[in-house]
Picture: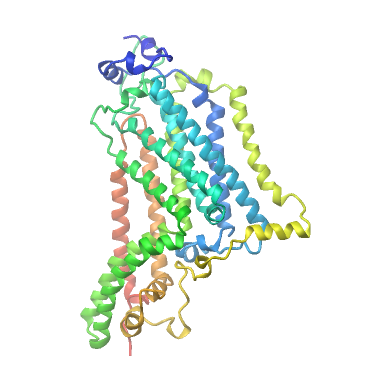
Length: 510
């Protein structure tokens, strides 16, 4: 086999009619050279996608840090751990400008994601796209998808009152989700994009697994079979989209209350109330120990749930997706520069146009900030920035429970649940258990520990990925399992050590 034959095929004919399963197996074993494609991996195209994605994330992050988010989007973790407060009532013009800017960028993300994914699937069907270029297409769309989801989190209150904008975004999100689920199928193979030890002494440019036609992996696996990380990728994708669909269709507060808060609250409070009542009557140490042990089991999952429902979780989803997608694009591109750099590194009309188009969203940002508003127009902006009053917005936030009265701010949790709360509380009343737990320093420490675990776990996963892309799979699911185990163990040790000194686990002193 010559290297030229493995790299050159008639793109007008479906590859599946030209190459048999045996030929694909031979190419996977011997490797091939990826021909350049400036429409997919040109320097201008790649930079346009990356800059647009990072601009979107930066806009959402700035809006979060500066308080330009609606109060209903902020959860317990946002308020207690990161000290974020909504300030849009003081700066309505800034909030409107940021919203228009993010709206414009998110439109770009969903449209470009669908467009490039459609081009990739067409190339896959025709059989004229290599594994390398299909990898670029797939993760550019993944990156666009991840950033669009974080933008949706910021725009949820606005879209909930603009049904036309919400409807077409739901359609676009569903289309991109289906495309990504189909597009991930070739990557299920454990041999997807592996370089191996191909070597031909007669050529300076060596064949790699990146040059193998992507269609060879459609419905077929090689090497050890299915990639162990494939189910994890599908799970992250589906859960992310289902959660964002729920936010657009149902109020985040109501969704969280019905699907998460009420069931978890019941599972936690019933045993705690029973133990607390026994302790209130008998004051036996074994009941106090049982109460503390059950809290040790309850608090770490509760910290995870409160983190997931916070706005910071959307930011984590976005930044992790950004870094992961960037690695999956940049590293394979560098590994193929020997065969593609001559064309894909050149600047031309097709590379400059995508970058110039990035200027358009800046107009949306300066439209409301840079123009002097008269009094009448300023009133319109303020009215537009305000959110219509609904029963959900009037009702006290579920993630910001009412403050307890002053005479009970230092009362131990076991006393509250055993002597007053469990006898009087009903399913429809605000949970004082959640109130007390959410305001405790111990619970804030657990939430901070979870953030630290995410940072360290993600850093380890990205480091392993960066060193293994193109060679072998990094087994990310094992690293995630280790991170979950370490967080659980550290949380238990933290509660065991600090619980007796915290309001949550302190005994009654009389």
